Amino acid sequence: MDVDEAIHKRFSCRSYRSEPVPDELVRKVLEAGRLAPSACNKQPWRFAVVTDHESRRRIVEECFLPGIRMEWALAAPVHIVLGMAKSIVTHMAAPAVSGVDYPWVDLGIAGEHMVLQATELGLGTCWIGWIKPRVVRTVVDWPGGVKPVALITLGYPADEEGREKRQSKRKPLSDITKWV
Amino acid sequence: MDVDEAIHKRFSCRSYRSEPVPDELVRKVLEAGRLAPSACNKQPWRFAVVTDHESRRRIVEECFLPGIRMEWALAAPVHIVLGMAKSIVTHMAAPAVSGVDYPWVDLGIAGEHMVLQATELGLGTCWIGWIKPRVVRTVVDWPGGVKPVALITLGYPADEEGREKRQSKRKPLSDITKWV
Image (cartoon, rainbow over all chains, first blue to last red):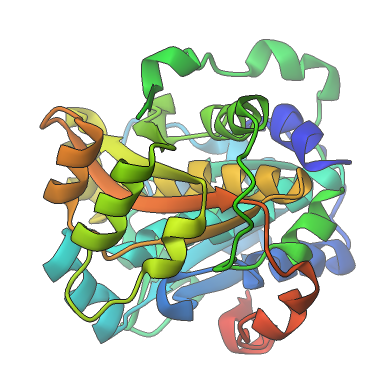
């Protein structure tokens, strides 16, 4: 699948078959994240691969604010938690210049490498934010220096055909772009 | 070019041929960014495509701290400035829950869609951070509600063969991943 096709086919998959994802494919997805570029090549990302049912149940039931319904995510056989390892250069020096915490940009880059690689492998994914980082850290047992930032669910889509109607609308290019 | 190949071939290109990039290809790159997923589908990204020589000269000479040598970037015939449009929901509500400013993650996602699409088109790219946002805003004439976050240079690589030796080392997967 070429890049252009993967970008067009990717969608936020919220319905999964129960079939597990072979470790070999999970590793291929992680490898795509590992190869991402990052500010000063700091590679601030950390990945926790959660396949255990009880840990995924805890993520779904305990790691979101009340009222946010995440039951669908339990059907995804793999949750990849993206964490950020702290670094003085990129977390303190860069924000002082640009007001930008580049490691968050880097996590977006690495996560989307995984999402596009998964799409190519026929897997569905969904980025999930708004997590309670302290609870997620307890579930995956990361040290205090690693901050959970987001999750990506991973599994075989239950409804491949319904993809098109589930794709979110985008602003037209003319609304978001200017030529200088 | 499939996704896996693009992820492996992408590198931070700091040497460009002077040949301009056809608008059609620039638009294809921008379209890849436009289709990126984002928190609450807010699409916080804004793109400024800078091809004018004087504007690129100002970016290279005025938008970085003294001592950071960016002359190489002037050879890139296109600079894409990535900006972030402010939104109350994702900039204020989400950080209160997670301590994460998701639009920065979103900008990483959209920017890397562009980078991988460019790679497939035979174009070189380089993410550049540490910019002075106020000066960049003046160059691209964005309103105060749009914050310049990063640049991506775009053009035909001068030295396609030298790619491998320029690729940065990555931590092994075992150092950045745990299985739960």
